[in-house]
Structure formats: C-alpha cells, structure tokens
Figure (cartoon, each protein chain N blue to C red):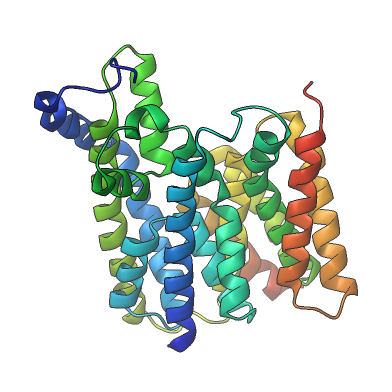
Length: 237
Length: 97
C-alpha cells in the first residue's frame, strides 16, 4: 500500500545495516538489563543454556522478569505465565501498528518481523522516520537482530556468572525485583492520567493479597485489569 | 526443571501469539478509544499491582527501601543503580530495625 514505507528490495541490506547501527546505544542498555535478568533467573535454579534459550524464544524482558519473580514467590508455573503475558499485551498494540510495514510480505518475513518487534526498535523506527529518514521493515529487523543477539548472550552470561558467585541469600538480593519494578513503573508514567488507574490497581491487588485465601497472583491480575479498565473509560484531561 | 520448561514454553507461545495476533488484528483495533487506552494502561497497572502485593506482605525495612529506590529511580533513571540502591537500603534497614 504505502510506497514511501515499502523500500525497494535493493535498499533492504542498507536499511538493515542502518537499523543494526542505530540501535547500538539501546543495545548496551539491554545488555545490562540482560545480565540482571540472568542473575535473577539463576537464583531460581535456571542455568545459562535454558536462560539463553528463554531469551531467544520469548524475547520480552519485563515479561520474563515478572514471570521469574512469580516463580520465586512460589506462585507456580501457570500463574507465572499469565502474569508475564499480561505485561506483554502492549506488544499486541505495537505489531497492530505495523500494518504498513508487513502487508504484502511473505509469511516468513511477517513472522520474523513480529518476533523481533520490541519496545526499543519499534520506538527507534518511529523516531528515525520522524526525522525524515527512511526506516521501514528492514530497519526494524536490523535493530531487532542486534537486540535479540545481545539479549540472548547477556542473559546467558548473567546466569553463568551468578553460579560462580557466593550464595547471595539474606543479603537483600530478594529486594532486587521490587527495586527493578519501581524503576519500570517510573518509566511507564505518562502524566497525571496514570495516577488513578495505578492507585486502583495497587489497592485492589493489596486488598486481595491480604484478605483472600488465594495465591496473591490472582489479586494482582484482578487489580491490573480493574485499573486498566478504569483507564479505558477515563476521559482525557 | 519441569516448572521452568512450562514457563519458557508458555511464555514463548503466548508472546508469539500476541505478536502475530497484533498483526492479524491490526486492521480491527482502533488506534484510539477505550480499548486502546485500557491496553496502553495495562503494563503500568500490572507493575503497580505487583509492587502493592510485594509491599503489603513486607515490613518497615522494605517500605523504607522502596522509598529510597523510588528516589534513586527518579534521580538516576538507571536500572542497575536503582537495584543497587534498593538492595543496599533493604540490607542496611533490616540490620537496623
């Protein structure tokens, strides 16, 4: 459909290289995040191989952290998966917005493109395009290739490195998740409209966790859905 | 080990289904309106709920460390520094309280 975003085939390698190059500062941030995730995964008894494998197949950092935290809290595998996937629903919105980049491509390119879509390269593609430069499907895939490679290597290294460290239990390492979530929350702040849904989510989740004889993971899912539902019917401004 | 496999495979299939489903639904989900607003707000709400559950089951040392982590997060905007601040604060406060 839109020719300006569908670069000719001859331009594909050049766009791929540009995507690969431009993502580098973001990849460095992802490497640090990956090392941290590897440490946390190793704390749950995951080895370097399965941690790297998880990174390649899932390729969604915050969802992986939330799922492993739920495992650490003893919630069980099914609730850990549900909590992680709930965090990934925003990816649905990102790939839904890729209509122009993906339409008319062969199935393997569509599957590759959606798997390599993450916050960083999706945002970078839009930012580059806003500057008036050409950045389409292959630019997104170039950025994603760098990100997934760095993510696999850094998470596996984190897990391998953790095994050579002394036992960290009792040193406050259990609070590392909470601190990571606090930073994640501040980066998700979108102004005052964020406040009410977050308060509703937190209140319902805490009340369920304290008052109901169920696993707290259910409380947090009920709380999150209530807050998001409120945000949906909330009027702007 | 079995539990890890369930989590890896479940997250892998679920995440890919969402990524591919987004492509399929692209034409149908409006880019604004109540559904889009709710989906956009969901990650933040989930993290807020998760923190509430963790802190509701914790004590004064963790609450103090959470306040210090928030300050570190706002000042540094860095994940490793925030985690370092949080872990050191909780270690110190648990020793004091």
